[in-house]
Amino acid sequence: MSLAIRAEGLVKHYGETKALDGVDLEVPEGKVVGVLGPNGAGKTTAVRVLATLLRPDAGHATVHGHDVVKNPRAVRSLIGLTGQYASVDEDLSGTENLVLLARLLDHSRTGARAKAAELLEQFELTDAAGRAAKTYSGGMRRRLDLAASLVGNPSVLYLDEPTTGLDPHARNEVWAVVRKLVANGVTVLLTTQYLEEADQLADTITVFDHGRVVAEGRPDELKRRVGGQTLQVRPTSLRDLDAVHRILGDLTGVRPTRDDDTGLLTAPVNDPVLLSTLVRKLDEAGITADELALRLPSLDEVFLALTGKQTEGSLA
Amino acid sequence: MSTIALDRGTRHGLTLAWRGILKIRKNPEQLADVTIAPIVFLVMFTYLFGGALAGNTDAYLQMLVPGIMVMNILQASMTAGVQLNTDVSKGVFDRFRSMPIARSAPLIGAVLADVVRYVVCIVVLLIVATIMGFRVQTGPVELLVAAGLAIGFGLCFCWASVFVGMLLKTPQAVQGVMFVLIMPLTFGSNVFVGTSTMPGWLKAWADISPVSLLSDALRGLLNGGAIAGPLTGSLIWMAAAVAVFFPLATWAYRKRV
Image (cartoon, rainbow over all chains, first blue to last red; front, side, top):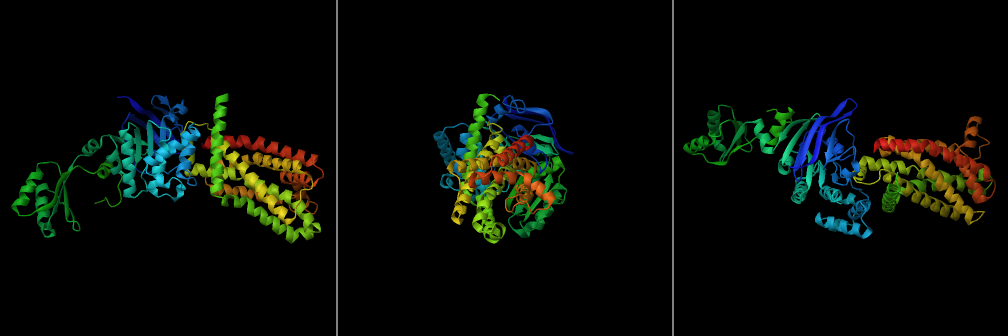
């Protein structure tokens, strides 16, 4: 499998702060690698180094074999970058933004117009093509930003927190676009704070914390590495909650977590066989359940276990 | 730098200048900063103080317009730094830099777009001045030379604004610092009043300040009178500004982007 991006031992300091503290990263061609981490973990710094915007203090990186420091121009002709903050010109219209970039990439005047129209169409922005980007909604702006990063037909795309600050609907739109690009063979390096986003889009996930890679693997591998499964039950009737709570407690030997509002009971288990035992016991007691499942830990829980970072309200 | 690289740099610079001009067209209020303020000064000083300072407003107007033109250009020349800083802080620069274009292109583009701003400023000022009664006493050639000199002055001093723009964090800070630098430079000169009544230390500076010398050169060109002395002084100042601020600006630019 050939690698689109290879980084070895990247180090970047900002004064006392080590933004990158020896990062290795490999992105196979045509795959999506998600870089997951909290704010300040070094995700954006890594992208900036790989996009030739920042020189690493140590280590080296190549994009399709071209060194990001020694041969930035070759790298730049291969990559597209969508920044954390939509980096389109807000005063210019969608068309003008894309024409400008196409002209900078040496398209002819008519070629640039055609390219702009094609991308606007592809990103469903044709109706807003003539409007200033500052009048766009968050989702539209992010789509325009994505379109802007595709003017040069990049084979490697960096998406630095592409959905931060977007509502769920706009986020789904961006995800759909990313999936389409991947289907067309584009390699994607995605940074995100959203575990669900990495789970949804990435083939493999690299977890960053304090400028270091703390874990790496497929989403399900990562979940397994943290271990432990969760059994969850929601009785049809809230009146059965106490009974189910008792049954589940007896079965697992721990006190189940209980949500009186939703009627959901959860308990950690190590033996998957307990699921069928629970079904039998509920049946014997004449209790029906709306929801009964054995699930792997969520990425939130994985992240917590790997980085030791407590998110708010997760102390229970 | 090879010829091809230079060509690409210039071409990309021109494309980015086109962007700057588009932005001026979309936000004409951007120009208000650099056109309306000088016009307010022009009107206020002419009618309030003109009679007292020069005997009558017409005579004062002839002296004031060339000076206001210098003030105008100086203010307009700070836009380059503010604009570049805005692009950097909004992330527009990251996009440009992640593309295979000449590194100098955004800088060239910003400075070229400034020229358009200078021209608009001069034209607006001359129209208002003419309505108020200002008349060019010489000829069209002298007028063009004067305008060209003023634009050249702006192009030389804009590197100071690029330097400050690349050094400071936010566009507001750039604007603030440039304002603090430009205001005393403008008022500590012969733009509004002759220097003869100023205290010795101020007169000493005002007589050799770039703003005074260029104002005198423009007065010579537009009203007739001595040109050689102030023109030489202006050109020396312009060369000095480029010699000092161009390397500083490109150094700060390379460091920042």
